[in-house]
Amino acid sequence: MTAEKQYRHSLQSGTAAVLSKSHETILAKDKVIDEQRSQLQLMSAQGLDLCGQLAETKAETVELKLEVSRILKDRKADLQDLMHIAVRMLQLTNHLSIPLDRPTAEIFRRRSWNTKIPAKSR
Image 1 (cartoon, rainbow, N blue to C red):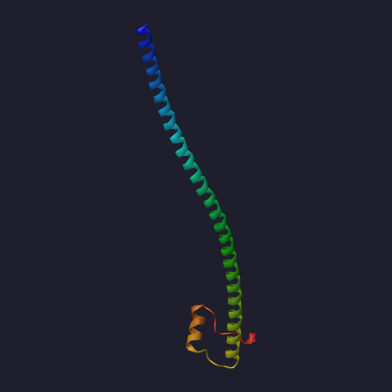
Image 2: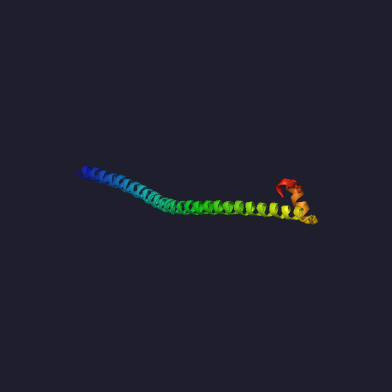
């Protein structure tokens, strides 16, 4: 019977060792799973933050595009007004036979604007 007891004892200790090793493996895998779950949660939170930032950036981009469009429209209107004033000024100086001052004549020349207005348009 002692041989049988020894056999049972060695069987139990071997089983206990296998169970202990198995338990350690399970704990190690659980730890890895917990770490990966934490990483996924962190990445998910970062993804949500980025989505929020993207939405804000898109809204800002739309606002900036509208502002640029408004500025360009205003600039075009200002340019048309200035061109109208320049033509009228040129008509008046020609009608009154007053020569253009040098800086103004240079502006007209740079813009390739004719400073000689035909007599019929006076």
